[in-house]
Amino acid sequence: PNHEKKPLAGSAYRNAPEMDGDHASHVASNVWQLGLVFARLMLGANPVNEVVEQTAGAMPLRDMHPSDRHRIRDIIRHHFDIKDNPGFKRLLAEYRDVMLILAGMLEKDPARRLTAEAALDAARAVAWSRGIREPTTREPAALPEGMFDEWQ
Image 1: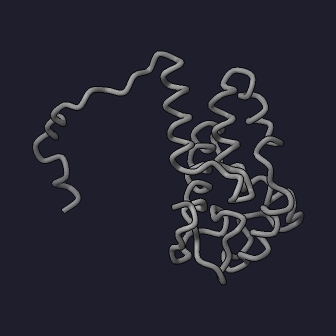
Image 2: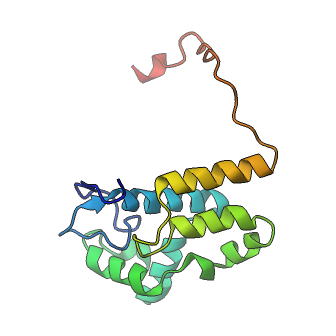
Image 3: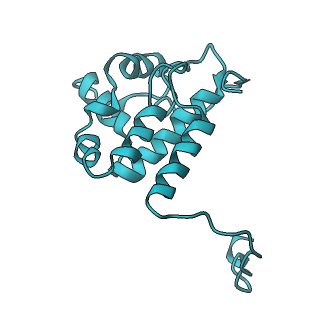
C-alpha cells in the first residue's frame, strides 16, 4: 500500500522529496506530509521552510515562486534533515520516542520512511507506555444547536 500512486497535488514546500511535477505521489508521500504537520505541532513551525530560506540565500521563501518546485525539491533532497533542526534536538532529550517517530516520518528515502501503519503503531506504543489508553467506543456528543448556522 505504500507504493500506491495518486495524482500530484499540494505545495512544493510540503511535498515529499520524491515528488515533482512529473511523477505521481505515493502513500509514503502522505506520511511525509503528515510528518510535517506533526513537526509543526511539536516545533511550532514547518522545519522545511527554514532550510529552504537558509539555502536559497538572498531569496527568502516568501519571494520564491510556487512554480519553482524543482529548486525547492532539490533543496529538501540535499539539505534537509529533521535531526539537524535545533528544536528537534532540544525536544529529543525529553520526548525521544515521539521525536524518533517524527524522524521516521520525515525520512527522505520513501523506502526507509515509516509506513502509516508503523507510525500509528509506534504512536500507540508510546501512548500506552505513558499510561494513555484509547477511549472506549461511545455515542458521540451532540453538537450545540445552531453551531454551523453562520457557515450557511
